[in-house]
Length: 65
Image 1 (tube, helix red, strand yellow):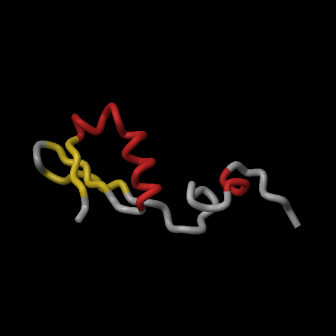
Image 2: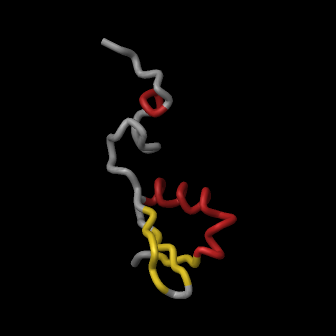
């Protein structure tokens, strides 16, 4: 089940929420006055900018050739 978090509660912990989504691969819905307004979702696996991908690619230091 997708977790819902109010934007007021999320504001000071948005970094923690983003890291949790990246780690667990489970989306989190942010709500405003009980109404869903946005969903934080993980990037697809294997993307160079995905924290779950190869660290050297995310850092831009992947060997070339």
